[in-house]
Amino acid sequence: MCVGCGSQIHDQYILRVSPDLEWHAACLKCAECSQYLDETCTCFVRDGKTYCKRDYARLFGIKCAKCNMGFCSSDLVMRARDNVYHMECFRCSVCSRHLLPGDEFSLQDDELLCRADHGLLVERASAGSPLSPGNIHSRPLHISDPVSVRHPPHHRNHVHKQSEKTTRVRTVLNEKQLHTLRTCYNANPRPDALMKEQLVEMTGLSPRVIRVWFQNKRCKDKKRSILMKQLQQQQPSDKTNLQGLTGTPLVAGSPIRHDNTVQGNPVEVQTYQPPWKTLSDFALQTDLDQPAFQQLVSFSESGSLGNSSGSDVTSLSSQLPDTPNSMVPSPVDT
Image 1 (cartoon, rainbow, N blue to C red):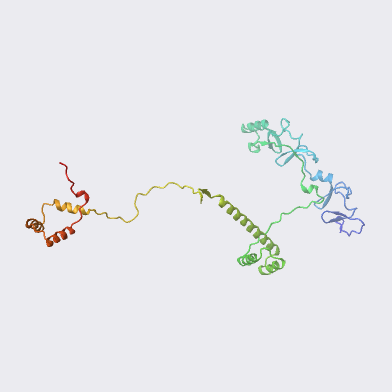
Image 2 (tube, one colour):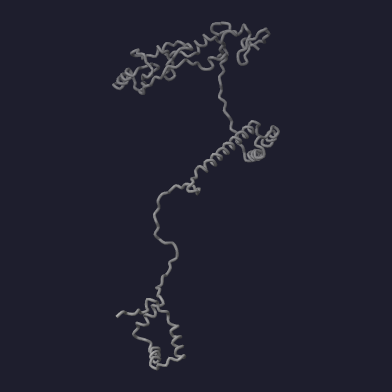
């Protein structure tokens, strides 16, 4: 079916314009100059009409904002916001000074102004000139280096086709579907085609969703395993060896206040009296026990030191504590 006339094509040769447009040889011509378009020239399609390269560039190509002329592919251009200029056309509209890369300029109503003329216009506007300060860009622009002319991609194609941005739909899995996929993954991380078909029937998901889920799951597990290996390799290097003892370096924390209170149960300390202290106190007492003292005196007066009395004295002395060496009197030199 010919796109130009709408009739069937029975000719020996068919002119096909990418991607799927077919024409009679007599129907494929420029809508402006009626030039026949064949395989030797470039054809452009816009809004259902075909154009030659020259007319398409003249009608729809980028034009200079100053002279309204087109550009060649080898021309260097200067850009100011959305406007494109020839190198020679990039001049101040007031003083016609050629603006070079690095100069500051302003853009007012698609007119280029150098920094000096822009300052004068701002002063006049603030002094009550008919010019409104709001229409003047107070923020000067900076000129960048010239760039080459670059046409949009559809200018170089044989067919202009407006590209529509497709929106990707995000699939949300429920708990049952996730449980089924995880169970299968634990059994076999790389299921075959038959297993994937069974998962499609069990989960109700598309084959593409299942394939992408397994790919993402394998990628996450691989990253996790690599991270664990790196941590294990770093652990031995973090330890230091000091005199044959392996330990982990510690980091000192902030100082804390010392608590003087002693933890634990209090212990009652009693006075300790050595055994010889009792005998010393007994010897120094003034009020002696009279019955015991009289018994000792009677023993000395009677002079009878029999076995029985000796045994009594021995038994009495055994009841007294031992006298320390410090209490034994030493002979005195005369």
